[in-house]
Structures are given as structure tokens and as C-alpha cells.
Amino acid sequence: MNESLFLDAAQKAGATKAALIDVSDIVLDPAYYDICENGHCGSFGLCYACPPDIGQVKENMERIRSFSRGLLYQTIRDIEDSYDIEGMGEAAAQHAKIGVRVRQEIGRFYSGRTLHLSCGGCHLCPRCAKRDGLSCRMPDLVMPAMEGMGVDVYKTTLSTNLKYINGVNTVTYFGLVLFGPEETPKHTQPYI
Ligand code: SF4
Image (tube, rainbow, N blue to C red; front, side):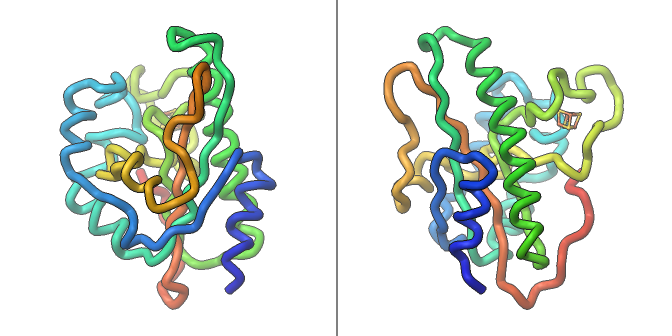
């Protein structure tokens, strides 16, 4: 398989930059679950794409390790300043839409199983249905939170050409599509 197609998919979808990585280079640390639980981003228990709804961190780390390769992509957006919460929210929603397009683009050429992770809080809906005790509106599109799955995003970027922080008055969000090895069966179940 021509893996550059994954990079092309990220570019076509609107990601700012992307890199291919071996899954063995993804840095995992179960402590990230604890950071979620301690309210780091405020989505713990309030979003279907976040802990505890995405399951146990050790099982999720094993699930990540069952793949062989990953497409790590990022979106970078300008914000007014570090207090621009509205701008960060808009950038996160834009990132989620781009994540959906990444999935669509990959689906054009890849039929193997994948697992698509993204930044915390999902952001596909303006307000997660979990907050109102309702079912997820788009279970087929949900991208579990990388940190909640145990991914140390910063350390993972160190083996790539992607920067974790991209300058003053910018916000950067990451997504990760895991794929391969190619002989594994297609995963067809939604994550939640
Ligand atoms: S798709 Fe909507 S309801 Fe489902 S996890 Fe994402 S924000 Fe929540």
C-alpha cells in the first residue's frame, strides 16, 4: 500500500500538517486518564468521546498497540490571545469537522480496520448529548480523546516533524488515525 495516500487524505481534508508514525513510536502513559479524571479539560464524564465512557485506559492502550501505523495530523488556527476561549472552541469544532473529512478521504482507498482518535471533548456537536442524558447523535463518527486513551501527544510529536505548539496566539489540535497491519479484519463497530 502507498502510505503517502494517508498524508494526501489529511491534506485534502484540510489538516494543516500530518506525519506517518509507527505505533511503537506513540508514547502511552496511563497517567493521562488520571489527568482527565482530575478535570483538566472539564469533559470527564460529560462527553461520550472522553473517559470514563471510552473505557479503561489499559485496555485502550492495548487496542492502540494492536495497530501498526498511524497518521498523526494537526490543525493550527489563529486566536486573539490565550484567553480567547470562543476562538479555541471554534477551532476545536473546525478540527472535528476536518477529522470527519479525514475519515471520508481515507475510506476512499483503505478498507482495513482503523481507529480514529482526536482531541478531547469531541466537538462534533455544540453541546454533547451526554450532558443532557441523551444518546450520542453520531456514534459512527465519534473520535475518542487521545489523552483519555493514554496517548502522550506532546512526546509522540517529538519523533515527527509536527510541533506541539505553533506560535503566539495560535491553537493546535491533533488527530490520530491508526491503521494496519493490513491482514487484520475491518473494524466495523462504532466505538461507543
Ligand atoms: S457526536 Fe455529539 S453527542 Fe456524540 S460524543 Fe460527539 S459531541 Fe457528544
